[in-house]
Amino acid sequence: MLNYVTYGEANAPNLLVAHGLFGSARNWGVIAKRLSNEFHVVVVDMRNHGQSPRGDTQSYHDMAADLMEVLTHIGPSHVLGHSMGGKASMVLALTQPEHVRKLIIADIAPVGYDHTQAHLIHAMRKLDLSAVSTRGDADRQLKPLIEEDGVRAFLLQSLDVKAREWRLNFDVLEAEMPAIIGFPDIEPSFQREVLFLSGAASDYVTAEHREKIRTLFPSARFAKIPDAGHWLHAEKPREFEAAVRVFLNA
Image (cartoon, rainbow, N blue to C red):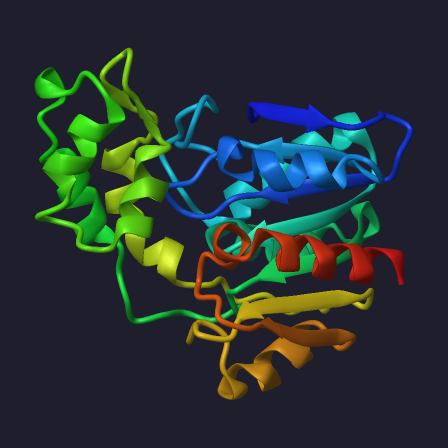
């Protein structure tokens, strides 16, 4: 079973959170704690990430099955997924709709993308872990390879500095990159409420994607957070939290 962290009272409405590629449950700690005054928040480490089991695949059907296993323990739940976790959450809702209440998809669409994140794996592999005693040491090594400060800070949350190891299964993530940037063909639709919440400065969810979204999610709503990019929950946590609350409490 996936490793997960819980926040809030167990008798509150469940909110299952699935992070994106190269992330972990710890990325969501601040938002989960804030939401825990109303919800029982369950934040997972996805397979091949964090402290969850390693697997040979990173397919969305397998990731959705992982999430379903968690739901068998906690019961029906609202589900929130970002990026890769958003695609896994969509597949979960489409294949196991009776276990999903409301669905929030953060900055991703049910489509294949042309980009790859393999270059970030290559950069992380080049880190000389023997020369890392602090996160600052690692950041200085990565800076020539990854210019964006926010991206480096995000990736370094998956580095166990004390153990001098990455909590990511690079081999499988790199081999499965075509599946990760793709999306499986699925026929059923999910009839319950869905919020597609995007960063206004991101191009991951465009007007061209809306036809496909509405085919799979007829009740979909769309909202954007101003001045936020793909990592909208990290860039604008207060605004993200407020949007989640409004939708779930409506």
